[in-house]
Structure formats: C-alpha cells, structure tokens
Image 1: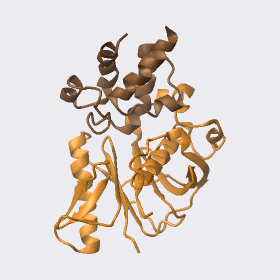
Image 2: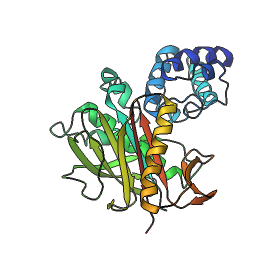
Image 3: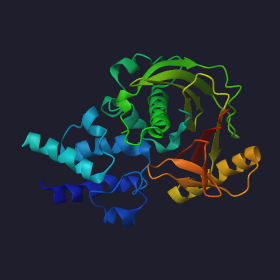
Image 4: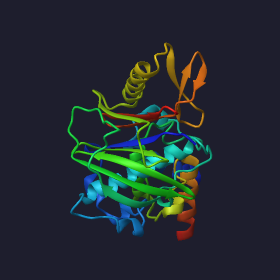
Length: 85
Length: 213
C-alpha cells in the first residue's frame, strides 16, 4: 500500500471525528488533525484505535504520540504495514 | 515559568464502551498509573478520563515554554491522586453541582506540576499549576448552546474577556492565537503577560488564567 492509498483510507478513519468535511476532502501530508481538521484532542486515541483496526496493525505509545499530523500518521502506518509484509 | 493549562472532557461525547478496553486506555495510561485506581473513590471510566484531562492540561501548561514539545501522554506521569474536600480559592462557576473533587501531582521530565479536577455526571474539568496552591488561578466552566468548533471558540473568548475586563479594567482587550497554538492576550496590539488556556469539548467550554503577582 503506497502513501496515496494510505491517505485515501485515512480519510475514512478521520471522517467521524471532524466537522470540517471540506478540509477532509483536501487534506495533504501537512494537515494538522487538531488545528486544521478541528478534531478534538479527546478523540485522538479513538483515531489510533480505528487506524489499528483499519490497517490491521498495532500502534504503540511512542508511535501514537507522533500522530497529530497527516504526514506523520502515514509514516507510522506505512512503517507498521511494511513490518507485516 | 508562569503558564496556564486546563482541559475539559464532556462525558456525553466519549465512547463509554471503548473507555474500559485496555487497548484504549493503555495508549496513555501506564501500568504504574493504573495502581492509583481506587474503585471506592471513582468509576473506572472517570478515572481514565481524569488522567487524560490531567495529561492534556500538563501538555498545554508546558507547551507555552517549549514550542517544540510533542504531546506524549504516557510520559506525563501522574504520581498521586487525592480526593479533595473543596477548592476554596478556585471557584468553579457553573450552574451544575460538582460531585467529586480531586487533586494531585504529576511529573514530566523534571517538571513537577499539580492539578485540581472537578467531576460531575456531565464533565471532568482540570487545571494545573506549578505550585500546589491555586490562589492566583481563575478557572471556569460554562455550558454553551452549540457543540461546533466555531461556537466553542467564540464562546470561550467572550467568556474569558468578560472576566478579564472585570479584573484589569482595560478596554480593547482581545485574544489572538500564538503561531504555536496557545491563546495570547493583547491590549493595543501589545501582548499582556497573563497566560491563558482554553479547553472545549462538545457543549462545554472552560478557561484558566493567572495574573502574575
């Protein structure tokens, strides 16, 4: 799965937690989950759990703390998927 | 460094089933912190979100002094949680009654901070300080009409400006956002040294600030 495909899937993970649907349609690797997508920080763990289920991976403490930016999310997910491959 | 940090969790907006799953809470609560849980004092759901709100508040407090700081909830160690009798110097202004009060201390790297938290059936609200005394802290929770981000942002700004205007009697106070993300208070385009923190979740907004001695 390449970064573009991960980004497409990531939109589905983020969709329930943002009211900024227009921003979600236009996200890129610089998009900040809290500042740009207006996602409440209380949902960040939900997003990590949903991403784990979506990609069948496990995201640990250290990786989870990087996931506040779309590019970093893709880094973490890509690394975990590649470890499984 | 004088700073401000607070958080609020609206309990109607959380996933209650998920809260109790180890796969969820282990993302930010460490095994040693789980030993602080005492079921006679607090429900497990509220314990989980109390720890989240403390860690979020600590991060906000420290971010003001370290713009590169990354939120690492598992590295913010909650060392002690006590049931408190009351926060006489720190009124929580809401029409709702508060059921439980907690205080305690946390450690992140070499930074020791203290917290106070108020809980009722609707929310968990927390404020932190670098001193166990909270006499200089103004901390308030408010219920608003709409839960969208624009309404939350507007309401909490009006709310804090109303209070600040009553305390320091300056016209033309306004709030801007520092590039790092925290709110700053301005008067005639000059930043005023009163650190402010905002929090919002669903229909609850909260602010904390302290006026330096």
